[in-house]
Image (cartoon, rainbow, N blue to C red; front, side):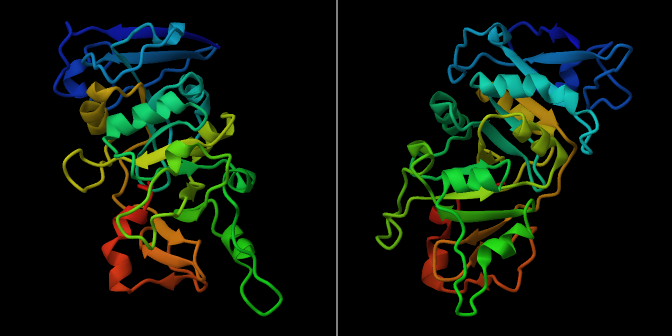
Length: 312
C-alpha cells in the first residue's frame, strides 16, 4: 500500500477551526470531516494540518516527524471496516507520538506505555499534575496480569470469583482500579493524596474498551497505551467532537487525531478493586452489576478525585 501526504500551509498562524483550514479539493460533502478515498489499488491519503508551533512538541529524528507543525488527522469508520487507515497512527505511537483516539465512551489522549518521554508530553499537553494517576488501555487480560497484580479471586467460602465475573464485562465501559505491578512505569503510579489513608497506594486504572477503532490500534501495539480522557482545558466537561479536540489541543503539541465520530458525554464506570469489595466510585456508562457495591461514604467521596485515574 502506497501513501502520499498532502499538507495545507497557513503561514505560521493556527487557523481558528479546521473547517476554515481546509481548501478544495480536500473538502468532502461534509465540511467537518477529512475523508480517505480508496482507489484500485488502495492508496492511503493522509492530510496533515498546519498547527501553531509549540515548545511542548518533542523534536523527532524520524522522517515521519519532519513536519514539525503537522497534525495528522485520520477519519475512520466506527465499525473498524477501514482499519488499514490506522497504520500511520500505530507507527507514530511506536515512535513516541501523543494523540487522540476514540474509546467506547469518550475520546482519550494516548501514548505508548514504553515511551517515558511521551508520557511526560501527555501530562504537559493535558496539564495533568504529576500527583495525578493515569489509566492504561489494555489489549487483553494478559496485559492486565503483566501490569497489575490482577483481579481478586474468590476462595472456597462462597465468595464471588471476581475474576470470572469481570471477564463477562470486558471489553466494556468500565475502568477497574487495581494494584500496579513493577512492570508499570513509575510515571503512572507516582501519586498520593493529602489524606494519609490513600497516600501510599500504588494503583492504576485499567480499561479494555469495546470499540473497533481503539481495539484495532491496541492489537498492533507492543504494549498497552497510557490514557487520559479529553476534557475542556478550563472546564470539567468532556470534549466529544474530534474536530473541536484538534482545534483546542492541536496547538498544545498533539501529533494526531483519529476521528471516529462525535461521541456521547458518558464516561466509563470506575470500580475500585483494591478493597474488600468492588466499590463503584464513579457511575458511568457501565451498569452496576450484582457483585459491585455503591459507595456512599462522605469521607471517601471528598477525596474521590484523587483516586480516579482520569479514565475515558
